[in-house]
Each structure stands twice: as C-alpha cells, then as structure tokens.
Image 1 (spheres, rainbow, N blue to C red):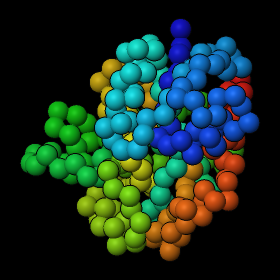
Image 2: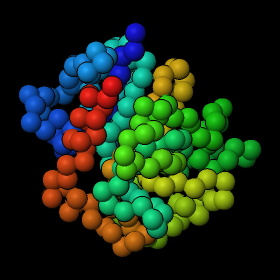
Image 3: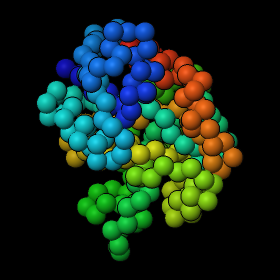
Length: 218
C-alpha cells in the first residue's frame, strides 16, 4: 500500500501548506488524500543533514514508500520568475566535490544526479520540470549563483537551487523510495529579484494551493 511522506523545511512553509487547518504549528500530521492514500507530514529544519534525517525517519518509522518535499527555491536561469512552480525531474548537489574520477556534485559511489518520481505532477497546469541542485548555502547574489552554475556546466543545467532536495533524493535512492520535490520560486538573483523576505511578507498562496492539489488529486 502506498504511504506518502511529506517534508517541509521551515515552520512558515508548514503554515502556508496547512493554512486554515488544525495542523498549523504541529510538528507532524497524519491524514489521507481523496484517493485514500495515507500521508505523514514533518518539518525537517533547513539544510541537507536535517532533510536526510527526516527522509530516513519517514521511511524507517512511518513506512513511507514515497516522499514529496514541498517548499521554496531560488531560480538560477533567466526565464524562471518569482511565483513559478518547479517540479524536479532530477536532483544533484552543487557543493560536493569528492575528487577524481567523480564529477563535481557527485557523492562517491552514487550517481551524478538522482531520479525523480514525478508522474502525478506532470500534467498540472503551469508547472515546469527541471533539475534542482542543493547545497548548504543561501544563494543571495548573482555572483554566487553564477559561480555555482559555472561549476556545473556544461554537463548539468539546474533551473533552481535549494538546501534540501538532493539530500532527500540520496536517502530515497538508497532505500528504494520514490521522491519528488515541488518548489515555488521565491527569488532569482540572476534577475536582480532578491525578494525572499518580500515573498513571505505578501503571504504567497501557492504552497497552500500545491498541498490542496496533492490532497485532491484523482
């Protein structure tokens, strides 16, 4: 039987996802979708280690065989703008370097990129698919973003950067768990859109819409 684990990094992402429900502010929630699929949601905290530990817990303690991560990310190509929704079709690290013969971003003994299980999100209106790259750095300048992108070119071309997705994907790949990361673009330093704080101040509704889409998908 399918059981889905949901990971969000921050309390404010949790509040946006579960706005208007009794689950606001709780550490975890157990519910079911319209298709009667059980799911467990947890707040991981930001960063790769927190995300990996939470993914492992959802697999080990809650028997989840599918994990979805909802949250925000920074855009790093010129045609990705604030408010767009990116569904990862693969994941990698941008801050890992294990030396030759491993590629930049590749953990030794693992693939260069981790796969995504995103078929259920393929046809939702207005969503884009692409590579999401992760690292333990909040990228807030065009110089930082450009440096990261240059280190990965020409083999890889991320559309967004976050701090959790690749770590969750690594755990899921090791445990045979399907994984999808769904990210709302909160800023894009390449376009001068350094608006992360403003994104939250205007109480963007897209995260809540994504959660409702997940719960109600037929």
